[in-house]
Length: 224
Image (tube, rainbow, N blue to C red; front, side, top):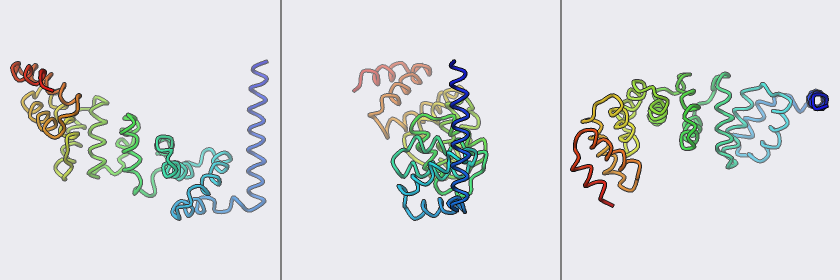
């Protein structure tokens, strides 16, 4: 009975998609739909585009370029993680316009979607962009790809990316590879820039202890 119901629903959806698509073709509404979607997006008509594009995605579920526009539009409408995830799912189509990609990757990174960030890296998307290099480096570290992580973080650092986060991830990489002297130096830099971050503080204590710097670890442990 459940199989019959599921089969009926599947066929109903197929039929509805077929007739909706035919209606769009006959009415002329499907003409240059991708061009119209792009224009609505670039004109800032995001609510109008949302209404237009939802139906188009239903009748064209494999149009990845359309999904990219929809993803970017979701972000503009405040549905950031939904939009970033949708955009990330379309990379097999390639990317025509890279201007929005750093923001997409930032959203993914800040919401712990590190695997999605790495998927951009593996496709060579904006590989030498400074901000992207940081997001790639941090995400590659979390994926256990330490040599690639260090390479991207160094690139970001050399080209002017600064702050406690990059020092933190450089320190973690150095710790992972056994270079505790460099790990302590980087983590001290991260801590000096952001003393309120508990994760940085605890990581510095751990590195001090691994390095045999027990007195410094104790002092830092007792400090508030």
